[in-house]
Image (cartoon, rainbow, N blue to C red; front, side, top):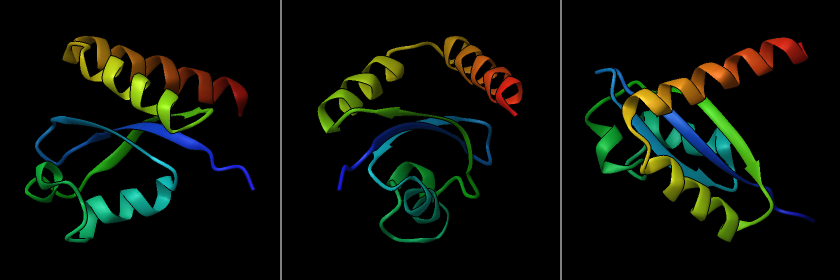
Amino acid sequence: MTVTWQVYILECADGTLYTGSTNDLSRRVREHNGSPTGAKYTRARRPVQLRYSCACEGRSEAMKEESRIKRLSRREKLALVKAHRKDVIKKS
């Protein structure tokens, strides 16, 4: 079985953005919204909404992509989210 890693961006209730990576996206979003295992940052900013995700070939690639996204400015992250949303709509 191949484990697919994903990098994601969440929008917190206060409008801030959080970037992370995981091998189980739905579980991780649930944890951010209601579990003590959610990130400390998001625990104080619930609820969160998934705004962006992309699949990576492995954990190493996901961590590199997460690091790259975290270095982006807020404006650049929002542009990434917007471009992703347009891409999803085109595929539908």
